[in-house]
Length: 275
Image (cartoon, rainbow, N blue to C red):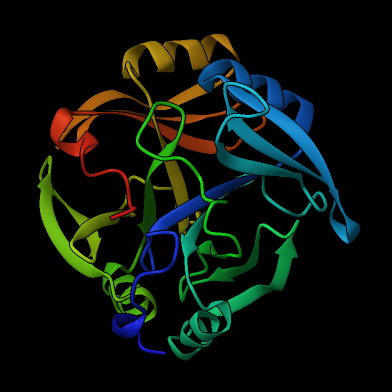
């Protein structure tokens, strides 16, 4: 299936829009406490067959809208990280496109508690990302308010290769803009800014792999970064102004990288992928 022919799904999303986020944590209790206090998330646990315990994060309380999920690291060889999930209405067809573009399937499709079908993939540079095919139109994550994922960003060494790959898989259009003298890529899908990309240059350790990180919307970037530090996080990029607002990149107490973004009014109106 060509990405441009995917159409709009029953959830209101289109192929390639950010849909879900999931953390693989070496300490689920520590992660539960940290993100609960930072973003006001509630967490409840499902038991899913061979997966064992599967934690779902919601805003405010158990009846709040879903914002993400968590699993324990499979083993010590796996790096703790957030996985960014992108929407598809046809998981198998999108997996075919991933393979045709040179990517790999790292985890075969699985059903997650009847909420949706998911698969873990990697692009041509080894950056991991995931696909989500929801099974129920109402089981979609909330967006556009503090505590929700509002952006996904790829750090890659070969930005031309990344453009070719994600353009072929999701139909993303690359739009470059100046970022303090460097090139930053916005990816658009259906006229909506779906994700971004930054080039990994000499400032990155030579062995640091290409990777995706999620950005979570906050009401006050500086206050959220300060609270995160109080809760045990480390700041990697201090609060800084960018075109979409004010952001900071951090590492949580278990070593997982993420970012917070205080969007300006113009950006805030664009951060809900349901059109």
